Image (cartoon, rainbow, N blue to C red; front, side, top):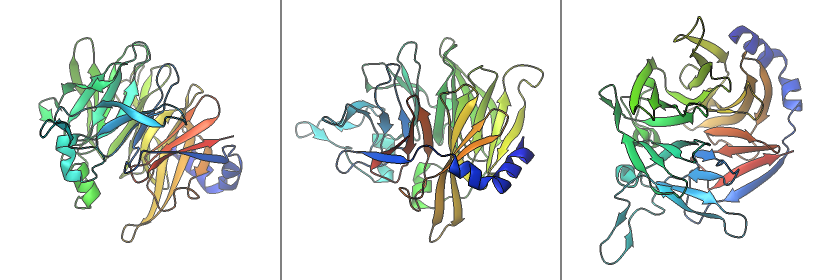
Length: 335
């Protein structure tokens, strides 16, 4: 209900901000030289968080005494066995090494079998078992079109079906980091069936989509469109099956969407960008429901000043976790 959403944003901002119970902030520091926890997840045993960083590794947090350790990686070329065992990619930040080292830009666990499905922004769709290690490539294209910029993923916990977004078919992550891209409408929403191994394009012509998430009742998939500042609903069942509608209009650019612990509720990372050069941006987390009603707005500026956030996710136990490809820590807010 976009009209209702706009009404709430305009007239009830003080109330929505005042409702924020997540006022205590702590951070989990990444290993030295590491940066960019773009995606974050907990496994089926509530362990982690697991994070993807800019040098292509997926790390797992093992507690304050251990910190983050290597869990998985997507590129078989990551380690070059020359002059002994030489680590080619660890801690690199050069985006041009992405095709060699990989860049996991989103992942989601299948909680039944512990398999982690990964979208690597430059290399394709992967999976890795609970033991971690080198991930297995599933696909580098869908519908005969190679992936250009994979950026979001979610798993249907009942069927095991995987939903993923392609941000663009004309530019990739390297263009974004280097600032030499033009926003377009060539994004796609795709589904993967792990039983039949089939990939199916559900939607194309999307304006920088991200953050697909399946509703708890499995009746729809939500995704954001960065360029149009909207959250959209793709219906899976009922009279509106296979149709799309705008659920939420926002004052900023949305990125990934994640389920909240309560059924029918979600979080989306939103960045209000006033100007690009020099950048002036304020990051937020918006909590909303399946009807498009905004429940809470969390201002993240105190700890993410002028930083683009990519993910805001709430876990059981009253924790809200924030991911950004621009920082060297995972931010955690608690009650």
